Length: 332
Image 1 (cartoon, rainbow, N blue to C red):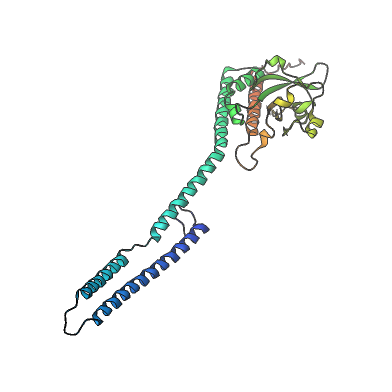
Image 2: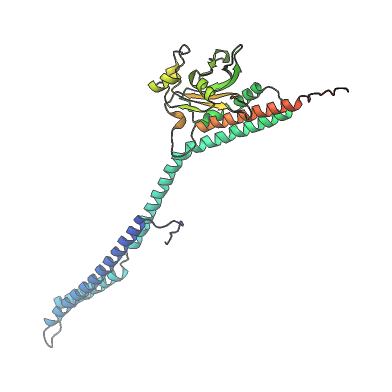
């Protein structure tokens, strides 16, 4: 199939326009030929009529001279008009191409504006990941030995990029939290304690709720070692499964409408090291635009994976720094 100047296959609209212009050009040529024949014939008839009324062997009178002169002028003017008349189909074609080009540019602009938020999220996520990676590398060199401190500083470093990567706006109420799983004394179960958070409405870390294993969205995600994403926490189905009875606060329904909880999975550990959670005051925030673009939940997944990497690095360096176990050889 032939291609146009932009390297694209001609569209049905362009083929239709080309056909219409071709028809217009043929109509214009036919009209031009008809006008030439009509004016030439009319001028010839007028001239002949003037000469047929000319008296024999007598000079023409004044009216006949004027009539003959007018006939010649009309003939010349008609011939000139026919020859200098230009085909307007070229100008129409140029105008139509300009209109089509403008429409294409408008569609591209609309596409750009539609995907621009995704571009902004991807840039912010890339910046946050770069910060996480650099911080983990620095921690390896400095022999940092506490995972909680490392993850806390990671989230603090990314407190500007992560909200943007997650698609939060200034008008939203949102949270991003890192929890560490700690075993309850005298019990085989665990509970999730906050080690760091960034949020639209700031509060002290010691005021954060502790989530027991199996309770609330984070506790159930921890128990199953799997991601949980809730579109609307106020729906009857979500309340029936995830409502933490006895742990509610008065502002929960206003601030926390959608939520995602992602376990921090470190290879070799039976249970998640902790959890990454994020909430939004907008319903369905973390899984909107299902067909294209960067979903807001991807920023939280990236945070979870880099948190797991940081924990694995610290644990590996800790094991490497420990002296090897000594063995005693029994004497014979």
